[in-house]
Amino acid sequence: MKIASWNVNSLKVRLPHLEQWLAESKPDVVALQETKLTDDKFPVDEIKAMGYEVAFSGQKTYNGVAVLSREPLTEIVTDPPNLTDEQRRILAVTVGDVRVVNLYVVNGKAVGDEKYDYKLDWLSRMRDFLEGELARHPKLVVLGDFNIAPDDRDVHDPESWHEKILCSKPERDALKAITDLGLTDSFRLFEDGDGHFSWWDYRQAAFRRNMGLRIDLILISDALKAAARAAAIERTPRTWERPSDHTPVTLELEDR
DNA sequence: ATGGTTGACGATCAA
Image (tube, rainbow, N blue to C red; front, side):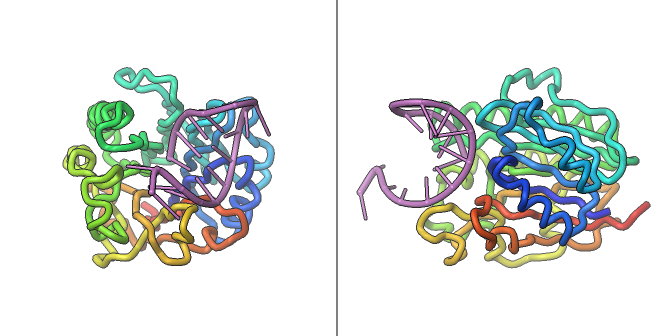
């Protein structure tokens, strides 16, 4: 099973990119973030024509998440009891015997901003939700746009980003509280080095200069670690005309 | 330089 995460920054704009990338990369499960579509406007027919079942939780203008799957999606959860929030950032589904939790983590704007405090509170609540998910579903994948670079290897210029938003210690500690539940950043099972990014700002020709961060993550539970075969950041869609500022990240899991 | 670019929206806000 090949599983992927991609912040598309408007599914309406990026639908042609999604179609081309699905045809080339052939993932089995895809978590999308920042669809920016209300559910009545979601392109269900177009996605089904690409060969995927789909679940989604959207809102107008901001946020919005979706999961595409070759196999049926069940046990859909969008509103955990401890995360009652109108912002559409969470979509948990089950595919076969694997639980998949798609997250669009709060950005936070800037360290000290009220949105930053909201981000840390959201992450704490998410940790508690995931603790329960892990207890019910040993085979757990938690993936999405985490809006946190796990460590300085994931930052093009750690000095300039030191204690800035996406890189601050409280954010990294909040992520660690989640991985300490027994979840592993799957990319790091296969790559130790720096310079591997999943997001590049639209400004300052950041992609061309590889001035990026790795903030799109696929976390897997211990029960899935032995099945992990390969992880990748698929940079090609970021080179296409009118791209998302994020590119897809993928993980291949050996079946059964 | 608190800059720059993109998306949704229709003035700015969010990222």
